[in-house]
Image (cartoon, rainbow, N blue to C red; front, side):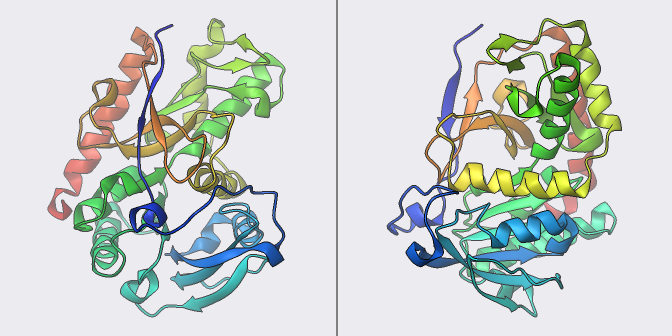
Length: 323
């Protein structure tokens, strides 16, 4: 196997503005030892991510149990309660919601792609006008394209700071692999989701390992992508995937597991450089991410990656008026 290389991705607002930050543990400090609160904007219906997300956010499963949060909510009705919630307000406009915020979690609505693209274009402009140093996570079936729209309209915002959540499909793939390999899903590592979410995702099991053993040589590896596409991750999986994606970005994981993340491709693995494309990332210390380079791509994977790339290009072209 070729040597794997990593390149540094986004550096969030705390470091870009020179603020003092320290590495934190999700399970360490009590609220009495909490760090000063920062602002998190929840846009367009956080309750759609389910009670597990709402409860987990309030209990510190995203940013850490020592990190107090000031929540600003637009388009959501459910209160977020928990030990790390210092305050929460309901904003009357996008600009008010994202004003001076460090993080934005934006959920795709139920409109068609054109109407959603317009909303995310407006959100990008609002972030640019009020909080151009924020880190943004986009969630939904078209999250890669909507993240691209947001980034294009957020003038001055580092594009590396705009990410889409694709981890839910990775979790579905890990469960499918675990069932075939007779191991626990948590023991399955090095699964990659290339492309987007749902029908736009290619779940690559060729590099999967469990308990120190390589699983990629099994004949069923090529069955996993179609199984994942046909499987619809339930809301609890999505909610936990969002929490875990934020935690991997903000807190990091010393074990450096591969985490699928929708980011600008930068032409990695031959993908169109302007697409937001799910790629494997690692983050050992928090407050950034690194792309994983040098993963061998076999002919089967190459074909599937080209298919999802073509689908994402078609989706991008459908919203080109917002780019």
